[in-house]
Picture 1: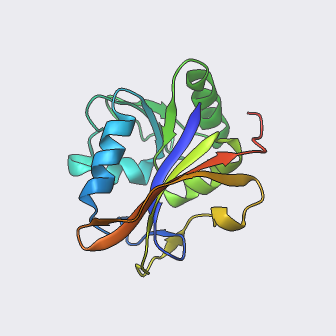
Picture 2: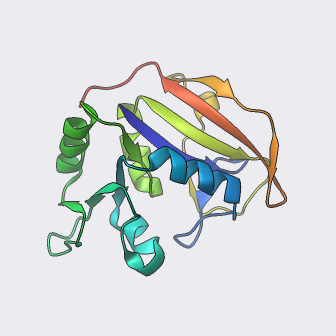
Amino acid sequence: MIISILNCDKEFGIGKRNGLLFSLPLDMKFFRETTLNHFVAMGENTLLSFPNSKPLKNRTHIVLSADPTHNYEGVINVHSFEEFLKVISEKAKDEVVYIIGGASIYNQTLPYVDEVYLTKVNEVGGAEVFFNNLDENENFVCYEEGEPLIDNNHEIRFTKYKNINKKKI
């Protein structure tokens, strides 16, 4: 199974200056607990945005870098989008693979994911990069929507969407 996991603001904004829009401890806890001991797939900038540019503990990382000379220690390095999809597809036969960013990776892989775990923040965060508005995407259906919660003075809601028209890799 392939699942994108992320948060967005009211405009489906997901980031600015290679960072997150909001500091959300509850959402980070959800991310940590959900992805723990699973595969996480990302672009190179997402890996570089982690503390000390090191992989997250207790996860297997698949990292796409367009530059074939960029190979990172402790991750599965791939250098084309086709190779990225192939590795994800192989791992997803037996394991859950979480797509964790950045914006380009989220948007390019969206047709191939089974589900999206989307934490919605009920405000505008001044985003520079955006995710697809799943509420207006005919290929996605929201099948779970949590009650509003307050997370670091921000109203959030955990939602889950199913891709009803998943493309084969």
